[in-house]
Length: 183
Image (cartoon, rainbow, N blue to C red; front, top):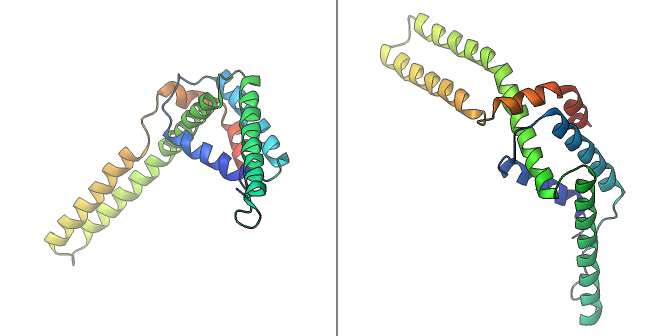
């Protein structure tokens, strides 16, 4: 369990990506999530690493005492995370994680919205170069055209289906979110 604190938080963020949205985002919810996440980051930095019990190196009773101590430390940490979530108006760390998922998905959708016109332009230019190439056989042009059109279709399917209200809420807090994620 050595180094357990940081992997626990990384797992929570990963699970956030899989969580279903709880409700539509708004500025207040994002502000509370930002504050809770900032507090969790500060709290995490202050946590001692949970030491892995030395199994087999000592007698069974001493090993079991180390295991109990590690379990108690993890339980204490889980309780503190729940308290941080509650201080910021969330019912649980699970709800905090769900909101995080919505924010990540909306940020991704917003980024794709911004990048899509440039990617479309690049695909159009590639298609035009293929069409204009006098040395390329028609069969090869057709194959390349099909491949580029598949790429175009994938571009439109890569962004998660995010409610517009979530995207707008994230758009209104972009600077704050960027500041948090860039640290």
